[in-house]
Length: 276
Image 1: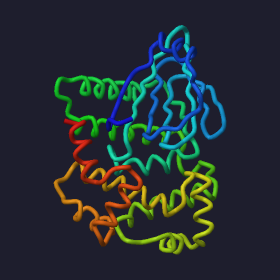
Image 2: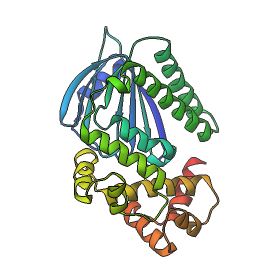
Image 3: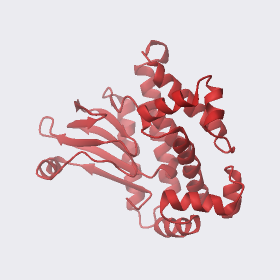
């Protein structure tokens, strides 16, 4: 996906079309949220398959192997699909990894709160379809959508009664520590010491949960922020690199190009053209 954001709605006619297509398990280079208003999905993720009935939400992080097969519920299907690049809401994306890494799907009650999620999706679609869409409005609506989902999740499963595995807790603490320190030029040892554990064990946990090493996750978080700053500020590439703990502009540009396939300048020019 080249664009920063996309939203669509699956209808009954899409169910037959997807069923007839080669719908193999795959990975995305973007984040995806499904909001099921009507219908069902058979969702294969984390090497497990579950049948979910609306109303529900399902978050699929970039790089997760998954497959979605939508179905009818009383002859109806209405499922919102929202796709966005990590940098579109950089400050929120890693929080989503922490929340949904071990529980992608969540059933919700068909109440006023869920109807507001449907309304927010419609508002985003209307804005995207406008003659001159304002993606800053879309960004705020998407952030509000995730805030409302998180508020509902906390009501349904309060932290004090959740059964949280040790690895999950450590991973969440790592992401919290990373969010507070990713702008600093710190490596794996720094985070391991903060969590009172060895670098090896922290790497094992991160590999198990996100299929990335600690260094890769640190770098990913820096680059998500870099892309956000490239799109939302007029700071120079050198200023952005320095802000994120890279002492040399050339090193920052090399890391960026190795991960993204283009220089920071090329990324800024291309994405700003797409948004405008």
